Length: 404
Image (cartoon, rainbow, N blue to C red; front, side):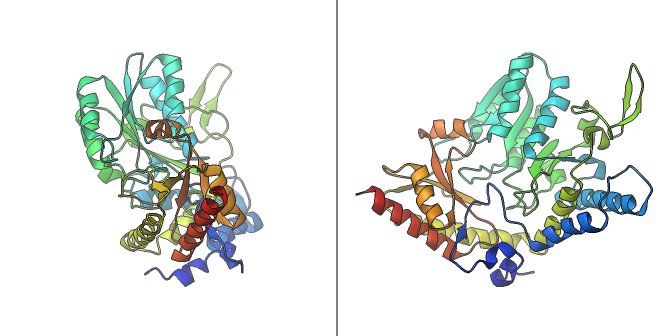
């Protein structure tokens, strides 16, 4: 389906507001189509029940919908086996499951993990914790002069260090650059190192195929993919699942429990202890069905036009500096001479323009850029050029107020 902005926006009740507003914060959380909300409401109204725990009609319906959601996600990322799809509560928990369920049991003191300076705190802090606990070493890929990851530095690290895992973002939540995953993963595999991809930002802007990437783990959240909060996904290649241990244990994740031992369930149930996010999984599947109505080439073409327009308009403001290279996807971060990002966001908020201010959970990147904070505008399929025009008005208003 071609992108018809008017019809597309009608899928979202939140955009029925009469007054002018602009939601430019989808990199934090995207808005949710009515079809997703209705699907989740249907679960709570008509077949609310736990899954895998009964033979009544409601339970059978909820279990079927829940496992169908897993199949939808398997198809969306092109996983080879449906059992490779694990439900979590968010991308952060997915990454922590890799750290605590795989890395802690397969790495030892002196082993190395590669991170990039682009990483969100959720793909940094679990590895810092692991460093504290078992003494692993962290090796960082910095930015080169062209604003992209320094691949020469990466190749040197891979060749010279004892690397046992590469944990890399697919797309920066600050600079909007997409990493060369095919190349990064190929070089890691040549040295026998597994790869974890943080796809939280990438998943809504580019088609992801885990088999083509040949990654071992891939993590993302539902709420950045037009889905509900409280649901995340971890793709785990079957070979890696065999190397993992349960992290969070309890009901639903075991076959047998005795006084002195327990026998875990098969995957993915082994990693899904307790009552899972049932409505949220069903809602995420519905959000994927919604995005699947559009061709990826049309999505990328439309979003690219918005980013280009925003870049063009921002470049007209002499006191505004756009961070990073020109090759951006999904977001633009910027600073204004002499004006704190929080002041800019406050002025924008007063005009009902939603943008982000702060370090965007990327302190090491901001430190590398030599700034404490920035503003970020981020787009989704429902945005329009008029949203960017409202942002430009807000920026100019902030300049007027704080230049007095």
